[in-house]
Length: 131
Image (cartoon, rainbow, N blue to C red; front, side, top):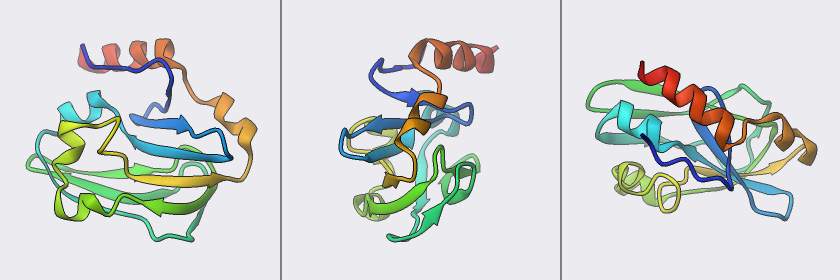
């Protein structure tokens, strides 16, 4: 079973969200998602300053097996991107929750975090996905 940290929120499209406690969140893809993708070879990052609505496509992750779109779990403005992924996309495989983060957003609505799944709910989604 994949690693699913209890302190994060999750989406059905396998993105995770960390509340940074200052009106911003950090985004990435889950351990389950990186395992399903296989070896990540390229990440298309969003532009800093870009305004996004929840559900907007904001980037692409390419692996040896497939390319997957990334979807914004929440509305907000991109305030930082993980430029290290441009040279080392495999970091997503090695450390999906720490070094392999993708972007940071300043939330349009901090309460929107509550709409995302907690670890227990996401565990059920990930398990169903493996069947």
